[in-house]
Amino acid sequence: MFSVLNPMLFVRVFIFILASSFLSAIAFASPWISVGETRLKQQLQLLNDTGVTRLSLSTWPVMWADVADALNAVDEKSLNAAQLNAFRELRFELMHQTKSEMKRSLTLGVSNSRTLFRDFDSDLYEKAQISHHFDWDGPNFSFKLQANLETDPGEDVVESQLYGSYIAGVAGSWVLGVGAIDQWWGPGQQSSLILSNNARPVPSVFIRTKHAQTFETPFLSWLGSWHFVTFVGQLESSRFISEAKLTGMRFTFKPFDALEIGLSRGMQWGGEGRSESLSTFFKSVTSQGENTSEQSGNQLAGYDLRYTFLRRPAGGVSLYSQLIGEDEAGYLPSKFLLQAGLESNIALASGKQLGVFLEHTNTTAGSIGGKQFDTAYDHSVYKTGYRHRGRVLGASYDNDAQIYALGVRHSQLADAQTMSATLSLIELNQFGAGANTVSSTPVELYQLQLGYQRLALGGQLKVKLNWLSDMPPQLEEEFDTFAASVAWLYRF
Image (cartoon, rainbow, N blue to C red; front, side, top):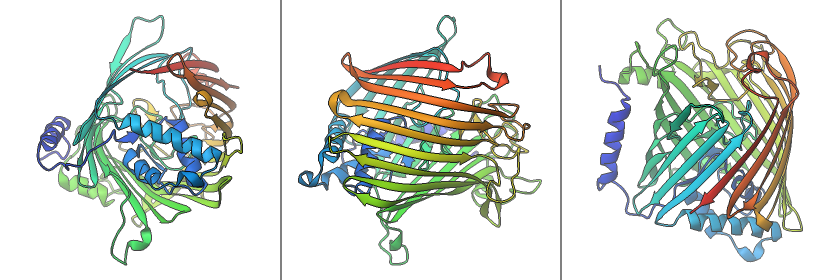
């Protein structure tokens, strides 16, 4: 039976495509702003929320092509001091990223403990990491080779990885690529319920829009500008069903400037001992057999939105929400996990920026309606669940958790300084059973996160402090309640 995903076959086919005349002759810049670029995210969000730009910012990575189009349409003379600083910093970074030459950078990071709960700004996976980046951008394609060495200081074991590496090319208005890159789907600050950077990136083949598209037909033109991304990847071999496949799809649209709506879907299928034929893949896509003995796979799907109801040059206020169904009923998502938040991005008269958010997350299936514990991110066939290398692909807290978070971020132009603080109340594994990978028992704790970054020693310096009031018993020997990390990025 023909397998719809053979990773080595896909790599060979993709390299052939890159070498063929199918690729566009339009110059292709360094493709995107990666997950974790929190300062650039805040600059983009400020310009969006104060009415300067109209970018889609709920699907990360964010394409530089979109940002370039938006910045080219800006009238600098109309900007206030904070807007102008954000505009200039983004334009500077765009010029650096779009150079048609080999670019190199080095990242050094060290921490006394790995981070238990990861958010958009998280970078280090282990206690110590050295990453050497090689980027090349040509007229038809780009590639990045990121060589990572990770270890726990004092131990002899060193792990080498290529996470963050990719090769991508342009085909008309689309970007095709293969690699292992972090993705973040949704408007949340602390987590995404369906796809985040909590787990290691999954090696995959992906297709996405290069920049915003619009439908010309009257029937669909009301959707406004839209984006689409999809990928097919392979999970690790050391799981209940070895080498299961992961497919993701996301469609976002902006019917008007202040509102962005996202539709997301993630599904596990195939793997050792299970069919990987095109018919099986089609059954997974069309949700056939999800609740029968001939299950086609494990699926999550749902909706998110972000609405800016106050948009002024001095700042904007937005509401956002994400609903992700753990199951389906009548071909629609059901048993929803919930996230909701309130966010404000303010342009201070001094030219500095202030961002504030309040966010609530509930990872219990059926959090709206009848709660069903021990359900989210788990599956009766794919018993390892919606996880990769021990971590959930969605929210960092795993299932049956409830979180309240209050955060503030302050940025200024001088030395590219940013300061942040987030206080969270976290209730883990409220039911106290199941396959929760974070805590096997109910635990209630507080988390305080402090961050500071600036230009230093010719590069970018990041310092983070993380304090937990308690630690799940099963993780006491693996994590510390207090974690301090330092990371330094240098561009050659």
